[in-house]
Amino acid sequence: MNKKIIISNCKKILGAYESGLLGQTVMPEETNPGLEKMDKETRLVYFTLPMSLNYQRDSYKLWQAALKTFQDSKTKDVFDISCVVKLNANDLRKKLLKYKLALQPNKHINIWQTISNTVYENWGSLSNLIDEMGEDFLKIKNTVQNDHKKGFPYISGVKIFNYWSFVLKTYGGVDLKNSQYIDIAPDTHITKCSVLLNVITEKEASSLSKEEISRRWRTVLDGSDINPIDMHPPLWFWSKNGFIFQLN
Image 1 (cartoon, rainbow, N blue to C red):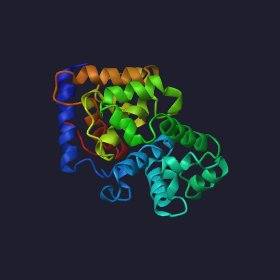
Image 2: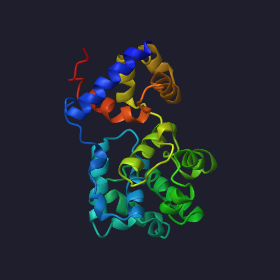
Image 3: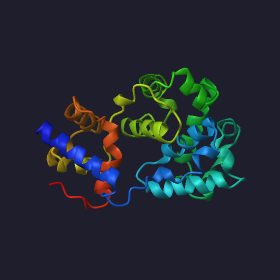
């Protein structure tokens, strides 16, 4: 593993991403009601609760379903935590299934309810949670992944937590302090890129944990001017679009 070569290639991919050379690069989360149309709390909930259902499914379809659910006056209240905690499971199920925001009629409804209850009972709102943490990534991380881990199903997982933090910073209107500590989220696409760039071997791709792959990326990029999470969108699209951009 040659760090200089990997960093050089990362800079080329970042440049290609910024120049539009990676192909289609519209993020799934771009499907939203319009950031300027949502207050802080609504933005935070909109980019948090659907994320908790984003496991082994098409991210674009997930966010399209979220938008349809938000735009329907009869289902929009699922994005209001104070309303969710008052809904019974059957009513919440109908609302979340209407546009296929939820795909699993029991598990997904339970996840949505659990996170909403955790936030409401401890902070009253997501805004209060973020504010109480001083918009500090490290404090939010400790709260979600340690202190209240069971109260944030899936969101508290290593891979999704880092990506959720990136989304909060990019779309949620949160000016995250210590955001340089957000690790890359090694899904299938990132893992493929990790092998191609010699960050890990092909054998390690199937043997290393997500946390270990993330740590490998942090080690590789240490000393460069690139934060690990900054590589997520360009690498994701580089792989998703079939590696049409060729490294020289």
